[in-house]
Length: 268
Ligand code: FPP
Image (cartoon, rainbow, N blue to C red; front, side):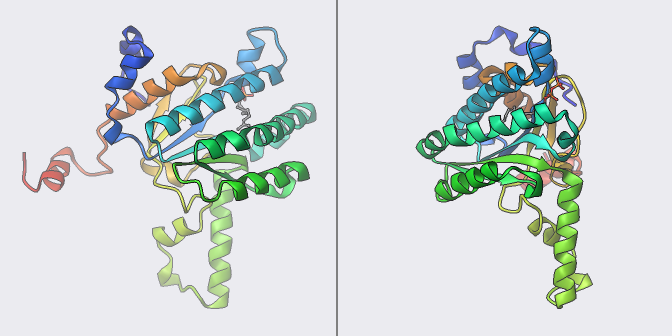
């Protein structure tokens, strides 16, 4: 949880926030739990889907800003395995929104040289979405300025189960032994194996939970929780999250003193 009072940033304009950011110390991989669309809509006496629609605009802006400043990988939690339990009408509308996003975004992704990827269990996804996912993934395969990953029908525990099953299949074939099983082998079987280490996880809407998102990957990530609802999370809120990240002292379980020895070669 952030310990910094982020109201210190209130005095700065967006341009000033950007100049304060150290572009050499950006997180390589940022993930976002996009929460609060329903509350955003409710507070305006609008249907929940209006919040999701507005949230899609935040997706567009956050993708563009991450690409602009040089984040290597952005992963967005768009639909969890648990979200299948929402009222069928809302699920149907979210699926339509997702399909619309895929159709409308392809040109923009190509123009910005962004590779598109999805992670999750696809068995329940409607066919038109699967076809669009294939199309956008194939069309952007060689893009290399940033990887945008959308988690759909995703669950972190399910991802670990899938990795275990794949490893056990290799064990049965005799291509893996018990001694081969270590963290790096498990990581190679996760959906995110091609992505850099997760450095920053953001959750909007004031909740401070991980909600089954990137459970393995979050081990050493910095967490940024903000009260801002996802449809209101735009360029400014992202820059503040990145500035907050840069105030953190990342020790990965080491002591500060040892950290200094390791980076400078001598005790400072
Ligand atoms: C959580 O808010 C949000 C979702 C379950 C869906 C997220 C979807 C989008 C942002 C739009 C589509 C995204 C893409 C990538 C096309 P909530 O509904 O749980 O809000 P609440 O907690 O206020 O009810």
